[in-house]
Length: 113
Image 1 (cartoon, one colour):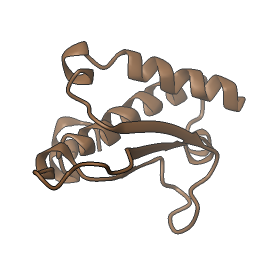
Image 2: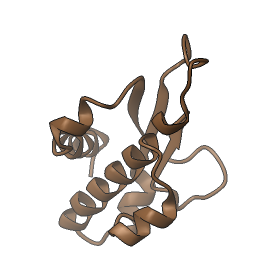
Image 3: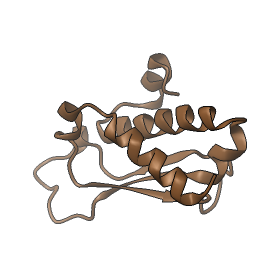
């Protein structure tokens, strides 16, 4: 799957997030990268920033939080286009949930682990 196709899947996954939630998202940008920089070669996505639940009066003038979705690991773990679509949606929701302060334990309970 080309990078452009994968980026479209990420965009479509973002479009499926309910408007009520996307309105609450604040100062966050979503990126697609081919591979994680270092560490875990199987990493599908990464949230970097300060979750909404941890922001206080001090939170001003900071760079946007960053959500990165990794194409290579996703394509390697999926056997079909349908699996890529499903896993991409799960990963996007998982990383956005971190922006809202939801931890991995709770995400696993909800089926977004």
